[in-house]
Image (cartoon, rainbow, N blue to C red; front, side, top):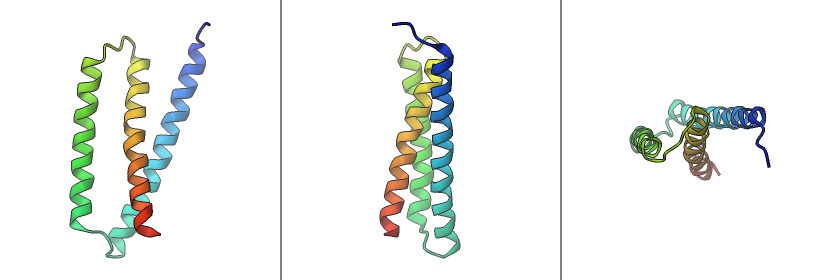
Amino acid sequence: MLRNPAADWMRLANDGYALWAESMVVMGMRTADLMTGKGSAQENLLMVSEKMQAGAELAVMLATSGLTTPEQSAHKAVRHYRKRVRANRRRLSKTKG
């Protein structure tokens, strides 16, 4: 079956939009917590350390995965970050409910 390059890029655009939208939700939840005094130093440290870890993991993954096109690298990066953002949204939502 032939691949449709335009469809691949459209999927990447949709996945990128979903990452952006979910990131905005997480940022809003964290901002609300900080503004209302519900945020904690532990959450702030976790947020920074998670970002550093996710970036390092992605760098290693991209360097060792043998991806051959920028498109493949972009798909892998978006999937990598979406998993982490989704996990943060779920974790922060549990503390709200």
